[in-house]
Image (cartoon, each protein chain N blue to C red):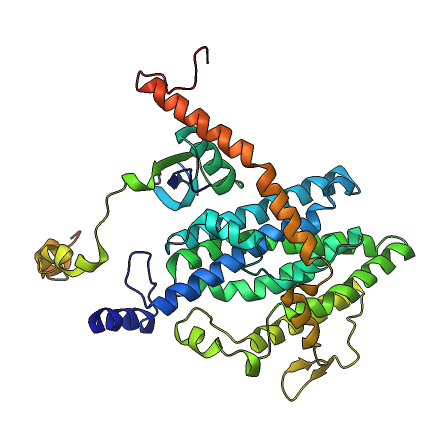
Length: 93
Length: 319
């Protein structure tokens, strides 16, 4: 079985929502991966759309560099609406 | 290293989840792999006791329900193998360890299902005990395991309810049917209590697992919870639980119950239960008999990939 590559499975639970990662499975190819994903992760109408992608095709940040990698956004508090003080009596802000 | 360990400890302390690529102590990783693998094996072996009754279900309705339930058990096993793989375990290796008897599964599945009432009692008591065990695991400190448990718990609720409904139906039937239910309850009650594992004073790893938030309650706490839940359910059903010492203790606010025969659990765990050899043999046969399917799918994928690449993948002409 480990001869078959590992796939990550993403399911859109209903229209209007993003695909969400739900788990993984092994399959010989893309098509059987989709069928296995349907059987395994949508036995109770949990999805209207499925993506599968080979795990070794996913690039990911390393947890070791977590702090420096995300540091650039850490000190930019002015990107948040709460940074700006507006008097309470100004409407619709 | 000390830095990484500190970060791990802080994650646990803040009740945050440990995720696959995080640094974790070797002991934590090994414990998680063992726990998740054993849990996965239990789901896979757990297909057998009830699966044996699919062809003998008393109606099409019951057959459809039982099929769906056994499919769920397969699904649960696969969610869990998937979680184990995020820790670096190899799925084929885990299957190998199961069929070679090098990793364990829940001792409960080494008991035989002698009648259709057993299907109902497994749903009610065995899945009920599993739910008691599993609900707290939805908050396990290891993220992928906790997420798999959330899916599993949702589905287990169907398992328990179909079992109880099956039993209610039989209890409304003939005297012989009621006797079948009582007989099944008599056989499954004590093994169900053993599902929670050895008593706390004989469970050496509990303290560490609690500190790592792998485990949220001790074995005895969960066992007590299960007994307290089951007593009113048994009354509503009209069966007696086979324990002369079982009674409400107002002072404790819990039911007291009789001593458990731990030598039996030991015997079953160490391989000498009624069905141990058969369960593993059936799993091994299924794995070996399925080899050609795995090989065919691999060959087909290689051939199709070759065709896409514009070369013949060496599978011979005419395909």
